[in-house]
Image (cartoon, rainbow, N blue to C red):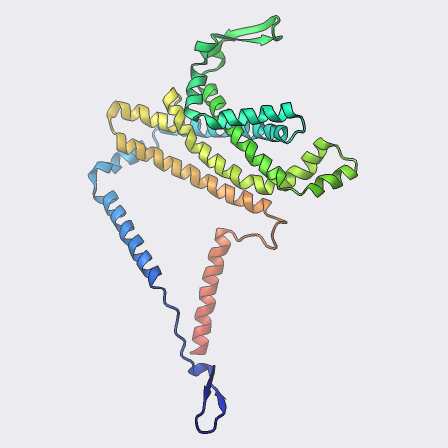
Length: 318
């Protein structure tokens, strides 16, 4: 910054310590912060002052045995359904990319059907499969049967819930895996073929490891979504977290406290899964960027170190 002298017509450099620094004003930020603070204060006041929340019942039922058992069932269903969905999704994705029109068409038809029908309808269908097929058999198609069993015994409620959730998830995972495979440059496959590698080995050793960077983030989101989607099994008689809360408030009519208990448990589990997802994504981000994104602890250390450094500089300058 310079200042002109009217008498001499020369320019003089203004010393840096004499410059007047005017910070940029952001009135919109203050308005937004005030609105958010007001809404937060209203929410806290409602939670504290409204007696209908009945926080004593929330504390009392939070760790009751039925609720904890329901949490375990919810986690089991999430793991089983996601394992089934991921395996099925990988198979369907490879089928969709096949040059065989019958194979690719069958995979597309499966995806179309399961993505086009509500998951709750699919769950109810699996529960009442015994009305359509009273018995299930293992044997040669159109030939002799080796073993036969009652459908309701072969597919109990928990298995029906796993099948309903897992088969539906497989349709969505197939699109995620297919997008990840297509994101890998075709030159990788061509170079592998030039080295004499077979297609299955190319997919396992070359394509899928590179596709994981694209597949992992949406798969983590699907896992978190699956954890919450398992609450639908409460309507088919499975004693998951919501089902356990439903059974309790069906007896004592404490609807709100039990729903709050279930919501708090879901928040805890999704928060843990979100943290795991962050570190898994960070692991697979290696090689795709110059430096890995900092962890929350690293960000906190950097922020506090920056403040400490700024305070020391200010004291020295003063």
